[in-house]
Image (spheres, rainbow, N blue to C red):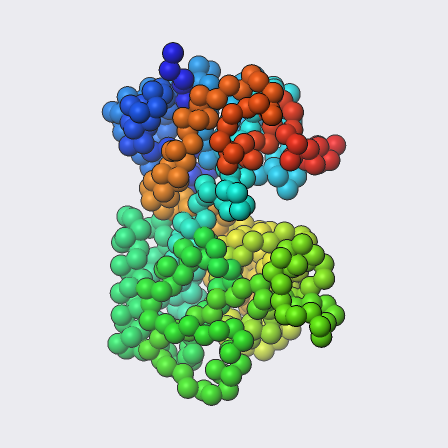
Length: 438
């Protein structure tokens, strides 16, 4: 008998229009993998219900028949059923308190939980992610916010023509808009007060790759972070292009205290012992017009940008106009990211002097773009990409015998690393989460 896979509708918010498996791939999996699908109907999903039914999927609210259920965002507590397998971004591996009740329910019901975030190859590289698309949408929204901020300052710029990502019909149309703004910059130049226009991008992974893919549609010259001071000293600026800096770990932290015999920056040592390091990133910030944060962060690492530094910076009139915090860690690497935003209310101004926020673009301090669900703004492209990388693993997940002990479970190794709970208990790598359930 063919195994039955469920596709849950996304309903965390009205912006979530993605699907983990697109209709075209369901058709392939039904034919090659001999799998059946039940898809929950959705009025907002980027792929209409009829596209799923046209490839042979059944539409039904009830997924009780399904052996495993795929989704994207967290699932509500009352959705789970005993001894089923659920695959989604659970956001529990850091002990996130708001998701502990959901995790407790999965344990109580004897469920298996597979988290996309932990699906990695033998080098620890993530295989299933939306990071690149977060970078794409995040940079578009950051440039939109920059154009609107300049407009409020009375500065005319080509960035004014850029819209928010979700306001374009597709990614290609958004890219065309950015390219047209770039052409105007190359031909007509920027307002003198903006020259040089310097954009700093932190990180070099998938998120940063997406952000740079958009930024690179503009005319630009790349500068190494360590050469930034010398670049400003020479004052040989162009009004017909932007300047891009990409920051790596060795640019933004140093040993604390410095060690003469350290032999240079060692990335592995930083990842293993971040407490030995301090941030030096703030030395670059006075030169930046835009800051786009794409770097991974948790509490073990030093912050990139503190509230205290921003308070000092904004006692004058700094160059920094907009922070696009694509990583969106609340009170995290950008300490002024005190809340997440949504596509319909994407930005706020953080006033460093009063430590308050004002929704919108007007006020003292940097505009902060902190949309926490950016890939949903390009739902079709991100769904197709995600489905492509997930598709090869679907038959193995659907057909595996989950009744055996975990050590005998024949999941692909990439997927087995991502099993958080198995038969209602934590797998060995995730026993530590027990401490967050107390």
